[in-house]
Structures are given as C-alpha cells and as structure tokens.
Length: 88
Length: 362
Image (cartoon, rainbow over all chains, first blue to last red; front, side, top):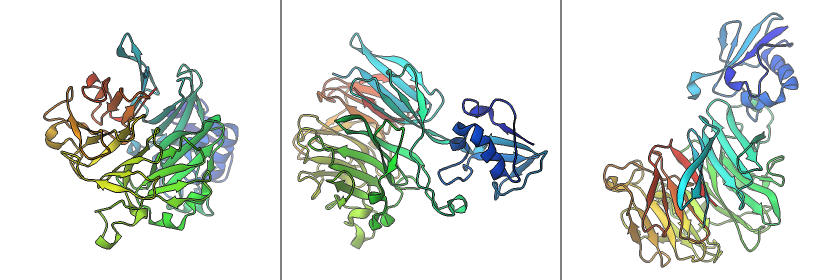
C-alpha cells in the first residue's frame, strides 16, 4: 500500500499522519484517499481535477512536476502532498 | 446607524463593533488567511465569508451566530469540461469578487460573482450553487478580458430593490449586463461608457469596458453610478445609457464608489493617480463627494493624511450605512477610517491592519 502524507497546513481537512491508499498512479492513489476524506479534495485539486498550481507533490523523494496525476506509483511508494513555496 | 464593521484583509477578517460611540475591535477570524470578501445579513447573524488561500484555492465559510462559530461549505465550481484535467485554459474558480443577497423573499438566496467572469446562484446559503449559463454562454463574453488581474472579474451585482428578477452586473473588463428575468436573458448595459485603453474605433464597445465598481441608488433605482477605469459615469435611465462625469476634481481615477441611500444625486469616490501609479495624487488622501448628480464636487480631507500617503481604496473598500451619514473605508496600506458626517470628517480607527480588500457595515 502507498503511504500518503499531507502538509500539516491541511490538518483541519486531511487525515492525521500517514494514510495508506492503493492505486497504480497518483490519480488513483489520491482518489482512494479522497473517497475516505472528501474534504481534502478541493484543497489539492481544482474545478477541473488538476493539481493546484501551488501544491507540490513528491513521490519517493522525487518532486513530480509534470503529468503529476499520471505518474505511476509502486505498491510501497511514499507520497507527500505539500504546499509549494511559490504560493506565498 | 451601523453597529458593526466587517473588514476583509490579507491576514483575516476583523470585526469592529460600535460601543459607547466608538468603534472597538471585536475579534479576528481566519487569522493569517487571505479574507477577500464578506456578506453580512441585516441583523448581523448570518455571515458569508470568502477566503482566497494562496495554495489551496477559494474557500467559503458561513456563520449563523454573528461569527461565534463558522462552518466551511463548497465554493462555486466551474463545470468540468472534457479534457479539462490536462487543459491549462479550462476554467476554474480564481476568486470571489462579489457577494450579494439575491431575494428579499428568501433570506438564504445568494448571488456570487467570480473570476473568471462567472455568476453563480445559491438558494440555500451556499449548500448548492448553480452557474448562470445564460451569461456564461453569451458570445460576447469572448471579448471580456482581465483588468488588473489575469482573468475578467465579475465584481458588482445590483439586485433591483423594486424587483429581484432585475439584476445588473459589472465586469472588469466586460462592461455591464442587465437581466429582467432573473438571469435568463442578459442585455447590454454599458452604452456610453468609454475605454481609452482600446484602439480608437473600439473605445465605445460596451463589452470591453472596465467598470471598477457599480452601485445602484436604493431610493431612485434607475440611477446607477460607476467608478470606471477611465473616470466616473452615471446612468439615470435604468442602464439604457451612461454619461461621463468630467467635473470631478483632482482625479477621476479610482476604484470605489458609494451612493447615498436616500438621495441618488449624492455619491462618494476615493480618487487616485491614474493609472499605473495608483496612489493618492501628490500623496494627499482625499474623498470626493457630489451632491448634485455630478455637476460639482466637494473635496473632503479632514482627518485624512496629507502628504506621503500611499493608501489606495479598493473597489469593495468603501461602505455606507442606511442613513447616508456613516461611511467607512479601508486601504491597501492597512488604514481604516470612519465618518459620522457624510465624509466631512474622518476618524482613524487603525493604521496598522493588513492590506484591506473589503469593508461592509450594518
């Protein structure tokens, strides 16, 4: 199972600590998390389902910058959803 | 006489209350967050707040007890379009630019104006939102453009006090549109406005105008005032036409406008040096007021800083109460002033607030 962590700035809507989720790419993993924690979805994705511009996604210590949602994950991957410094 | 001030700032929503004839800070909400707009009910119990969080997008909160507690609810959403997930141009909510009560018969009905160029309706205090597709699908909307921001912003919503089905909206930059059937059909409402920033043959195109703020006279609802990018405009025929007011002293550039609740000939403006500079002319903070429909203006400055002032009042930064005597304004440099005498004199409430986006009073 993928371990998913959210920035502490989302603690009022995101699960506390790491949460496990399944999926073959980041889209599916996040969808699995959002199904159980629906309030966090709008903080990470915009109206069209795009990752918000000032959200930074790290997968296995790599900053994923392009085609984020399509990026494949391993069963033992670790995903961090953070706020980018660019957002102020 | 107003008893509450709601100040939306870069670092939260501040509420001031009138106690013993003085305005007193009575709490800060959403501390640290970018509070962009607030709509209070007449009794001050229901509050609708819009936040624009730098990382996480637009968020909305409501209170049913005057701000003691808040609950978050979903902001309006633009319809998902096919392939939108990979299309940078597909629309998404960039900001809430207008919030108004929609219907005196339904205290839960809201209009919400947004960027890019959207209008949404909620019958239930934001539990559900419906985009006004008739406005969104207007072919002329393709001519709209950003004014000061990347996206066109629908910032003014005037619900006619005689008939809530008649609504006028103003867009930077997209002119003015008016509906008489609750939003099913939208007519041009910007004839006579002039856009000096356009090529000569396009300057009177109603769909490219940049009204910064539009207000409707509650007492004579056929009268509207607009602070436009190019100056001050007035309509006295229910938006069939506008005429430019060229008599304003010091500068006719600015963002905010307020109209007297009982006299359509009385209106206030807060001028600034046009248009790239956007600070008080010669560093002197003033308010201009006309009492005769724009024929003449008074320059009001008692209590306002004269010299080296950089305060700019944004479009939602000037508020007036229902008597027309009390005004309040908040600036980009965090100064908050009130007046109890129609703007003749001003009292500084605070000089140290965060940048102020919007002021409401009730």
